[in-house]
Figure 1 (cartoon, one colour):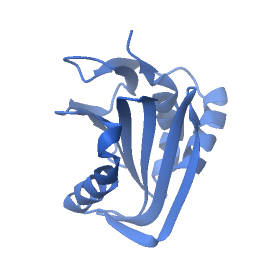
Figure 2 (figure 1 turned 60 degrees about the vertical axis):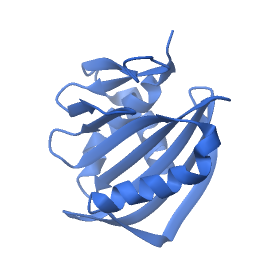
Figure 3 (figure 1 turned 90 degrees about the vertical axis):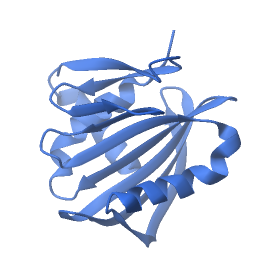
Figure 4 (figure 1 turned 135 degrees about the vertical axis):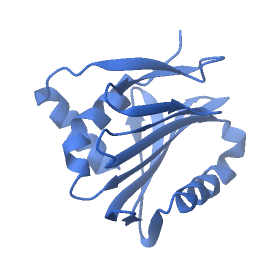
Length: 163
């Protein structure tokens, strides 16, 4: 996922401006906002937001969580991915730490398979403050996901603390 984010940032410099809708996470007591591209199927969830690209090649979600429950975040995400038919190749796991919009973020990525074949899978935890983290979940069909790199970059760049 980190390589995807770096590529997305570069692609953003060359991408044309796309229209997007700003969403509040969660909508009832916002702690963060982000922009999802128009044309994506976007749904509010109990703990955040999920979106699928117009061609179904990319899935992206953001959920609010407590840092006190960090131990269960990866397990919950793995169960969610499994429930969606996403198979993770645990031997391909990569881990890194970085900054996103000035906040600490931890990335874990894998290769695997989705219903369409080989897939890139990512999980990230963005630390907003001592009480709140955002959990970002991603998967994309290899060979098809690359055309959505600019959109993913714009989503990530748009994540902000709610005012």
